[in-house]
Length: 338
Image (tube, rainbow, N blue to C red; front, side, top):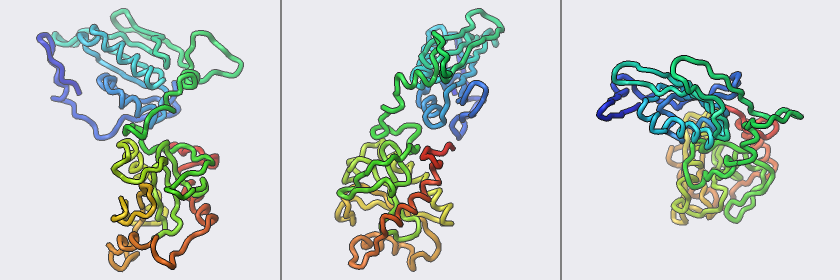
């Protein structure tokens, strides 16, 4: 919504428009590509554009608009649209109304199409109705090279900014989104984890099956970096870990028919932590799984300290991890699309 005022202009869209409760969506497989939907005022919010690309998978962003004449003449329209194209490495299509709506409001016009390099490849500079034609090319066809075309995939390969985003420091729009697990080992404190024990991975977090689960589906979520205390984690890592917990717990509850969850963290020796690496316990719960509901906390306190603790073999854990992986990855190890 917009609240803009000056001596010549007063706009109060909030008088007749209210914000929605869901983020804009990406429509996959349209004739122009995977299309992220937004509107004119939305182009002022880079986090929304980033969510459409990195969380939604968009390679084209649409901003149908009625941009005001004063802000357009100030350069906002061109600058913001080019910025959204450059930072997301997406094509931007901005169809803009042009003309006098009433004595107090004139829209700026200048419909345009911008490529992922930030180049304006089509613009309506004349007033009045008109049609723009632009060629949108996402992938270079084998054996076909055309000068002057900034292919989406080529731009993203040349400047792979998507690989340099700091999920550990900042809560980003695609927080908790899975990436391929790979084959490398990980560290859990001083314990070496084999990739076969991991069933979910992001750039900063992993989820692993438990060597000695208290209930079916008892798993752990940990940061990739070995950090011993919760207070030492960057905010971005905390956000990512708990986004992982949310995604994982939904699938585990569905699989095990659980009605509730226990989500617990033991932070420090006096809280019962024995592995000096932050870890979140995720336990699907059912009626009667413990005689008293809160007995689970005593069990968590003692389960890794009892003399007769039962340990599962690597093979048993690998079988379970493979099953859990199928909730989030295809048979080639690539994340499933939502």
